[in-house]
Each structure stands twice: as C-alpha cells, then as structure tokens.
Image (tube, rainbow, N blue to C red):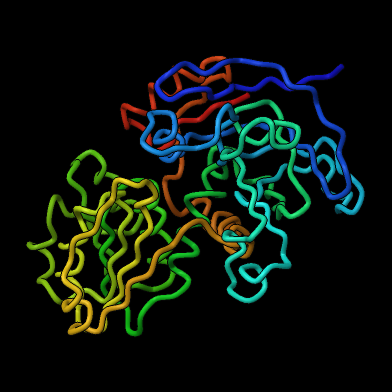
Length: 345
C-alpha cells in the first residue's frame, strides 16, 4: 500500500507527530498532488502556539506548490503532471455566498486546507505532508515554468489575499498607508505601485522589517508616519499588522471619505475601541478582507509571472527545511528572520 508522510498537529506548543496516511483513491473531481514546497504562514504559527483554535488532530499548512500525480473523473485531465497551486478554500459554487455575494471563501459548505481534522475525508488536508488531495470545488492554477516554487508557495494565501484587498480603492487614491511590513505589507507595496498609487508608506515598529520596503516600491516609516504625512491626508489605510492597537492611529491619518481595510487581524485577541462619531463625521468606509476568491489567485499568479524580475522575491522565503525538520522550521519562523520559512516534503 502506498502512503503519504505527514506532520500531525495534535496540541498547541507540542511537537508535531510524523505519521503515514494511505494514499487515497481519486474520486470524481478530486486531484492528488505531490507537494514540492510549503511555507509557514503567520496563521499557522498562531495555531501552533495556541493563539487561535483550529480542529485537531490535523495537517496544518495552506501555502503550497506541487505536481499533479492523479486526476479523478470530471476534472481536466490535462492537469496530470503539471506543477500547480490551488485556492485555500473548496467551495460549492451554488450557495448564496458563492453565487450572490461574490464570497466563495464564505461558502455555506466551506472546506479550508490546513484547517480541518484528519478525520475529514482521507486526512491529507494540509500542506505539511508529501501529498494533498484537492476536492472538486477547489480551483487549481497551473504554474509557469519560469516561476520557482519559493516565489509561488505564499501566493495562494498572502498574495491572493492582497490582490483581493487591492481590487477596490477609493477615487482618487494617491496616498496609501500600510500598517505592517510583513509579507502582506510587501505584497501590498508591489501591487499598489503596479496599480499606479503614487505614494505607499509602510509603518512598522521593527527597523529590520522595514529594510525591504523600498525594494518593493514603498516608503518606510518607523513607528509613526508623522514625519512623512500629516493626519487627515491619506486616501486609504491598510491594516496588515495583526493587532487592533494600530487602528486609532490609522483612523487619524484618513482624509474625509477615506477607506480603511482590515486584513491582518485574523485572531480573536483584537478588540476594537473607537468612537462611532469619528467614522460618521468623517464619512469613512471600513471593510474587512479574509482570504479571497478564485479570480484573485489567478491574478496573483499572473502578477508574479509579469513581475518575476521586478522585485527581490528571493529575500522573502528561507532555504527549505525537510518535513521531518518541521519543529525546527517552526522554531525558525518564530525568530522572524524570514517572512516565510519553507518546508520541502
């Protein structure tokens, strides 16, 4: 019997368990992928460290690239042998969120890779494994040969989410502040500059995290943008810092009619304290973004293909750890030396 090797997440702050799972039969619409690279997202760290609660035992990991090794009926058979990435969510395509709200990532029958217990289906539900079984409602995107795995792996989470968040901007949008110089912030810089936003200022408390900002088209600002921009002048502010403590400052820097996007606060310890009259009197728009739809992932891969030489993408992802070294990989991720730590199964 052929098996896949996977790293099982059992409890927060505990080592992963290496295990073998039988390779499944590909049913109608299924696709079996042999993983070639996965990366550790901040949300994976939050789960492993107990900052957020996910089903367990499970196979974590939702940022990945792999090669198709088996295709079930009712799937495009030309995918066989191709290097691909895929949407983080498997959606039905028929419910109200999918059809009417343009929110397939909030499907009534949603399944998310890296967020489901091993008893759900065959168990190969995450990227910290040698194989993953993609379900019928998952959009699969072939990867151009000139894009390396390290460039593509984070695209099916961080980059696609930022493509979603940058899809709508206020008019005019000449000055935009990004709160946070992590992966989301740097992707935001690159996307917004490509969209023609004249001034993208990135704020962070860590000087080391700001070092790459200029190379991705932004202007770094340590702690505060007071020296670069007066309050009430920004057309838009993007929160990608993952903390609600930055929100009052972000509100202050918006012009009347400004736009605030919440993107990074995906864990529960993010209480908000603000006066409703500020939102009302300044006619502000506030919107939350969580994950993305299939078109955003398609656009993310197209963006990488077009801009593969435009930015220092190689500085974002660490040299790979092996799958049995997953505990060491997570320890490295906690050091925040790299924006993404990679694992090669």
